[in-house]
Length: 209
Image 1: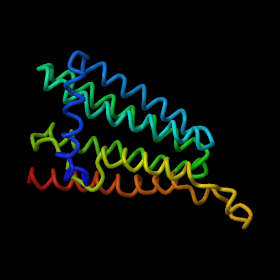
Image 2 (image 1 turned 90 degrees about the vertical axis):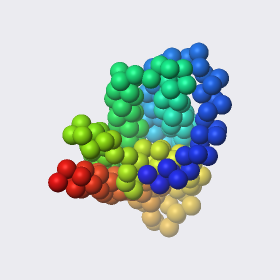
Image 3 (image 1 turned 120 degrees about the vertical axis):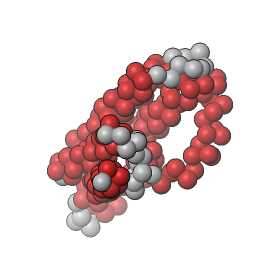
Image 4 (image 1 turned 180 degrees about the vertical axis):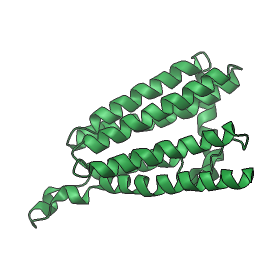
């Protein structure tokens, strides 16, 4: 994960917020993150800067809450295997809801196969990480593209897409949907997501040999 190098900076911001949320159940934060992902997916279905702005906001809130639930659990002594399991299940549903919204929305609906590849890559990346732990190799968070990386890319892509005026190139006879910023983000997820899954699979295989 590229953003792992900046984890200490994120902790400096997140720790004070987590302390303020110490009275909130970590599971409540986890479920709230899923709700935010659902709203993000819904807003990705609509055309226009307002929808993209709201989608970006809810993706950001999903990422924030996903980072906070574990911190709150550890700070309050409420960390548990059940909570960890719930977090991973909710994260997978959140990933699918967000990417499905983009796939079916106006910015990449012409390439449904691309959305499918992106979703497969995202799910397999997470599966390989937890499967490594299941076979005794330890949970594997390594790889080119982790969940935090994906969410940051999605927020940036949505904001850039909101500022992109398709009318500026439509007059040239160019179909703007073929040059969608979100579409290229999905290309990135489809390629790097599957490469990350393969990278984790190979790493685990070598540890078990």
